[in-house]
Amino acid sequence: MSAVFQGYEQDYGVLTADITNRIGKIPKLAGGESEEKKQMVMNVEKQLEEAKELLEQMDLEVREIPAQSRGMYSNRMRSYKQEMSKLEADFKRSRIAYSDEVRNELLGDDGNSSESQRAHLLDNTERLDRSSRRLEAGYQIAVETEQIGQNILENLNQDREKIQRARERLRETDTNLGKSSRILTGMLRRIIQNRLLVFVLGIIILITIILAIYFSFRGH
Image 1 (cartoon, helix red, strand yellow):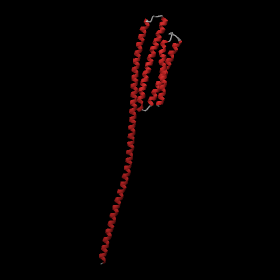
Image 2 (tube, one colour; image 1 turned 135 degrees about the vertical axis):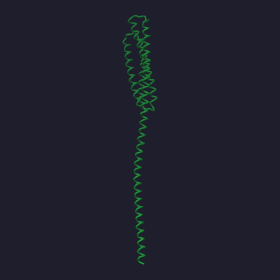
Image 3 (cartoon, one colour; image 1 turned 120 degrees about the vertical axis):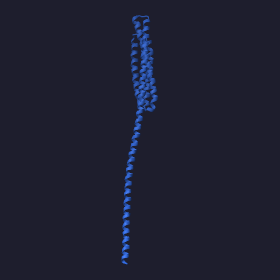
Image 4 (cartoon, helix red, strand yellow; image 1 turned 90 degrees about the vertical axis):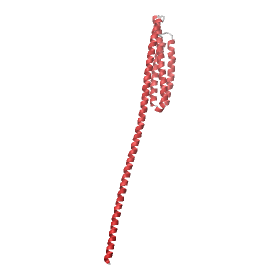
């Protein structure tokens, strides 16, 4: 399982490094409306989607890892998601700069109005980033809650198995006690029978002795 996760990690590292490099190049490309710059923006958008898909795959792999080994991978996933949020924020800022450059070229503005618009857009971007971070924190809480729930379910399953084993032992003990009770009952019955037999034999012997004495005296 960890080998699959590490493979995704390597792909994610290579992809995010390329995204970072391209984001840094977008504002520097000559010509606000150039095809090269538009293509660069589209490529970065596509790569960001691929990176998100990789994160989803990595998240699924982490959920399959045993609970006792999951903590380390969860921390790494948290770092990767924070890095992803930063990349998206950097890309938004890069696109804002790119859009301002296009407007300046079309309107021939000296950049004063564009600066205020850029400041406004950057402010909105920061708000979106804060909202994204809050959503990310909520998601992490949900993931941790799910992990706690899974641990509780595992403990409950273990307790249920222990209870089932205890029930089986009780059934076996009850069966053994039933057998022992039947054996003891049989032994007690034979003892009573033997005592009755001894008593009857004793009576017969006593009667025989009495008759013998009687006939002996009668013969005299």
